[in-house]
Image (cartoon, helix red, strand yellow):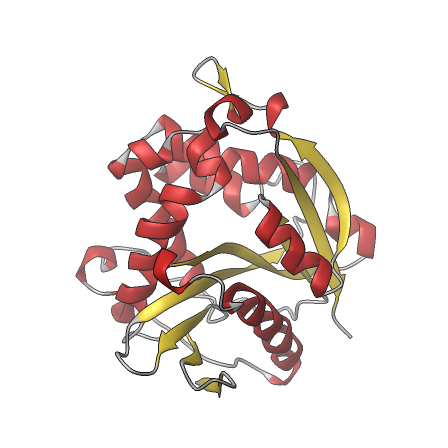
Length: 256
């Protein structure tokens, strides 16, 4: 599904599809896995196998049919991507959330496991399901833009469109993608039933100043702020690897 073309005509915003999926993974591999704060903090940026495991997480999230891409109109190249995940509240305290299960069952690398466990921990510290009294959310899971296409507000556009997409889900699925659409690398991935619940909030973990500015511009409400000085991987704090004093925010916005 095509959403719109930017005012300057340079980029087309689309729902993730079988055609754009390989390009979206390229964006995550080259931009997110190399430049994102927690990827640096957990050394995913130095571990190609760990990066590939994060791509598998993207493939799994893609099956929810709520991810988006920005495509350069002159070349057809995917230059920015928002891999979004429909999250459903657990029914009881003994049930583990999606990220925790994925880290335990499908991560072989300490780096990728540490990153996903960090996501699960921060999500758990600020339980937006309880805070907003809802049972389903759309989480902007991984957001990235290729370096040569940054500073065109593509991240903001993709996040704003993610909110619009979440609102439309009350009328049924916006787009659909199957395991077969994901290509041969993911053909053995188990098919799963689509999420039938409708998200009532959109949430995200903003891990750097640029995404925190996006959240502020789109009126996300910060639920918790955590310092990267307090998280360690292999005996060294995330902040020490990132090289500056930075923090992350868990934030959400109610979908009317």
